[in-house]
Image (tube, rainbow, N blue to C red; front, side, top):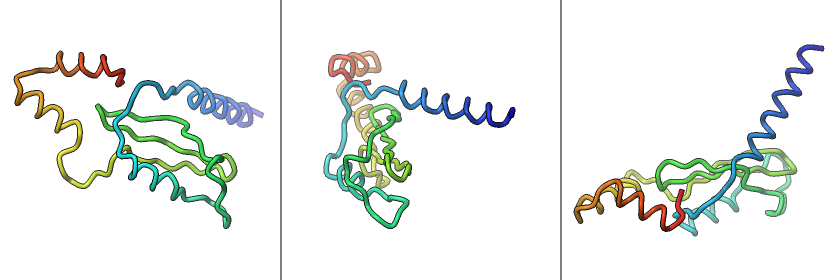
Length: 120
């Protein structure tokens, strides 16, 4: 009896977390990279389902880099897609910091720019 109640509570907490993680604001993404990876969703069944079954359930932000967690309603598989390919080069966070330092600006100006663009 107790384990069933614990399992139900965990499922409710997971559902609440998925519902409360809002995808707000603007993001910088490499559109081609994002769409190619989203369309190559690794379904858990023999069949591939239509793209309308795949939903973005939450986003993970680290500076200007975003990761999106996608989930298929049919096979319940989750798949993470990055906003841009990471290939060992300077990422967008490092590039924007270097640019702001080179022109003599600092954190507060970068924060103001991000706020004015509605970027989380």
